[in-house]
Length: 185
Image (cartoon, rainbow, N blue to C red; front, side):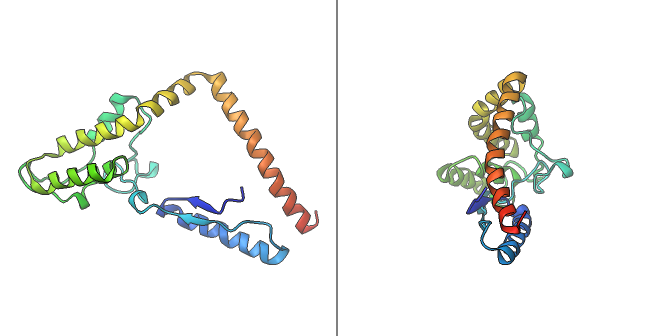
């Protein structure tokens, strides 16, 4: 798609690097055809933690279902693994999966306020999880509703998919035509 920049997670960087290597080699052999994109990796969300603190991944079985119904979504947030510190003990926001997830959906001021509460002690992980859930739910409520509406309307869903396919074909055709022209096909 002739992109100059591609947003990727840290764990996907190698896929973009392979793509870049192939494009550079092709351009070297046949002349400039492909744009060589650079990765954009936002440090704050380079790796989103899953339920068990490892990076979120279907293969790890630790996915937080962001578009699931609200009740199921809340249940998943409340299952996030934490350490065993008591309510009174200070906690380190830098090592907490709940806080890491919260950072993806909150502003700097909110993050600093919650981090201060972690460090001060007097707050349990149940409360932290509820704060995290509230922040995520506020951000995801409307997208979740739209997602459910589209999923429930198969005609609309198929229309959206077909429209996307048609737009992608036009762009892909331009690129494949350039490639065929350069290699003499």
